[in-house]
Length: 336
Image (cartoon, rainbow, N blue to C red; front, side, top):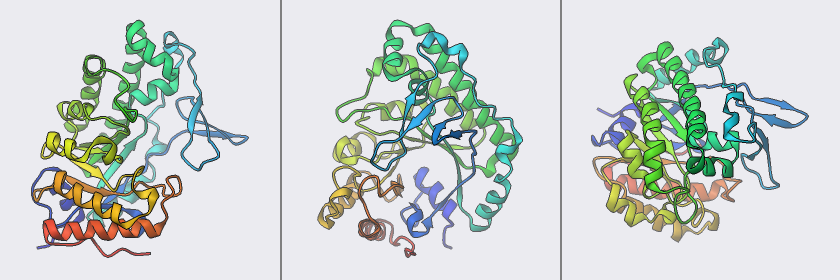
């Protein structure tokens, strides 16, 4: 009997032999997952966006998601000024039921996203330099700000759990942690300060029956172990060449599931088939296994990284080939 999309994702994450490579390529209408709405109380006035935490966003001339240029706090000691979003507001969930019903009809794996789950939210509120300095010189106020963020996001988790229970299969979060060379902080500091706070959030998710997915850009080779220890089920890594495909496979294959694709920096922008084939083959050899442990996923903003649909189609076909070689079944036929 053929596995449903939900069963394929679950089998991959649990290393229980998916029948093919799980896929998240909405651009080709091939996606084993479905996002559940999470409306935010962001405001746009005269073209200026202020997010629901009070951070002001701006864009460069290059198309992308933008960046925070206006921080609500001039110092960590001002953490009392932060007014967190109120996730008990009913309007936030009014469209969820319809999407859950659609996901259940199509037997999809459901997911809610949390943007800037901890470290990113800290420095978007207080500034990057202030945050890094505060981790060493003002631990009390850094911790107070972090705890406010943790408690707020746990409140979001509980709201979804109370309303939808195990119909929700996972939470997916972002927290970029690395430069091209290493993480922003030492692992001693990461484990001392951030690990218990992450674990508190992830434990709350697991208590409701949800899987934990985390995205992190940069060379986060050491932090992957921290994620494993904290209970992460799947880690989204979009720069496998920067990380070192062989090293990551040697250290973590079989211990955590990888959500990835051909490298978004060194491979996809060059639009060369041989490089895409190389990435697909190396990821298959070092990150995937017949038991699972890999989800093929789109970057989502091809224009920002200079990757047109034609290049994505080459990548899709190569990962479909890999899927057939490892699991005996190709990816679904792309559409559009």
